[in-house]
Image 1 (cartoon, rainbow, N blue to C red):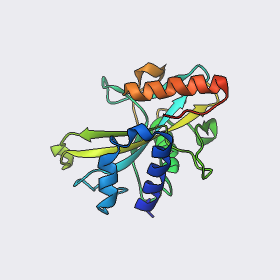
Image 2 (cartoon, rainbow, N blue to C red):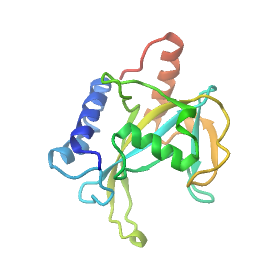
Image 3 (spheres, one colour):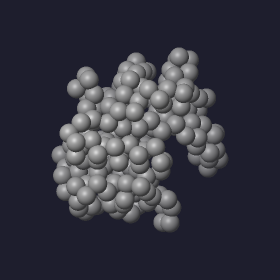
Amino acid sequence: MSIPNTHIRAVLDGYLERFPKEAEAAGPLVRALDGGHELSSPKEFRVGHATAGAVVLDPCWRVLMVRGGDRGAWLLPGGHLSGGDGALDEAALARLTEATGLAPERVEAGAPGGSGRPLPLDLDVHGVPEDPDRGEPEHTHFAFLYLYRATAATVPARGGDSGALAWRPHTDVPSARLAAKISQTLAASRAGSTVRG
């Protein structure tokens, strides 16, 4: 079973309710949903496809990141949706475990949504270059990034499917907007409220 577009739309609607200033940036995803493209399929290259990732904070507010390749960039754990995923937040947690070996019981979801399901902390719409070796044309990823808090600051014993793992300063995340949201989350946590934008 793949994640239906109706679920992606519901998550997007909740996200934009929380972060209304990002409506324009989410426009390509809205158009893809309106066009009826199967966004949970990693083979949807006409407009791109949805992916899921995790922003895991340790008790010191560092972010768990994985190195892409031997000397590649430090990235957030995440990846394509699979047929066994039932919801975007479940996919984010599954990709986290696959990429890092961090067991689901060692993290707790961050920002809850109105339906009882977590809402993404960020929606990262970015281009992916053509990859002739994999037969993939240039396309777009609609990355739903979910916030999790680790119960300990230890890096998992095994590295999962990815390379090196490290807890890095939250300012090392791939976008300034996401770094600002993490800072707001920290401030809100100290004040006992939730992040809105």
